Structures are given as structure tokens and as C-alpha cells.
Image (cartoon, rainbow, N blue to C red; front, side, top):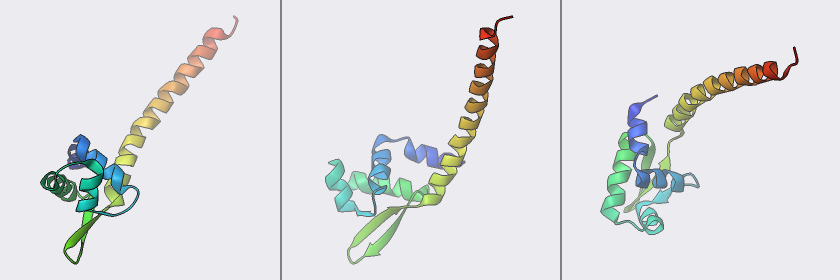
Length: 105
């Protein structure tokens, strides 16, 4: 798990950008319009997301179209999944213990 990914996603505006890009590629202008931020702010956030490998830009005439890169998100999913397995194991043991308590002796 790359800590750069977590740092990039720690900002609420960058997280909103990622959520917007889940539905498909967008230009900077479209992101500006949807979030109500200024263009320089959005460009700065996109640069951080790009440096973290979360988004990639495709030049198209005088625009840049941004899209999510799935690889870092898969790594994040795998990392979070490892904690889910730990909690599932703990909850299974708790369930077993509660059944033991309910069993008459």
C-alpha cells in the first residue's frame, strides 16, 4: 500500500474529484463546474492526484481530459480488505464465544 495514495485521498476536495471521475473521464472545466471550485484549485488537486498515480490526463486539443487509474485503487482495496479479514476472524470468534455462553451446562 502506497502512503502517497492515502495522502492524496486525505483531502476532501481530491476525494470529491475521485468520486466524480468514477462515473467517467472529465475535463478540468467540467470538474470546476461540478465542484464550484476555482480552476487553479482544481488543477492543483489534479496534479497531486496525478503525482500519486490516481489519475491520468489525456490531451485533447486545448483541453486535458482526466480519468482514474484503477491500479492504485485496487491496491487500496486489497489493503483495506486485509483489515476486513482480521475483523471477520475476530467477529467469528466472538460469535463462537456467545454461543458457548448461551449453551446450558
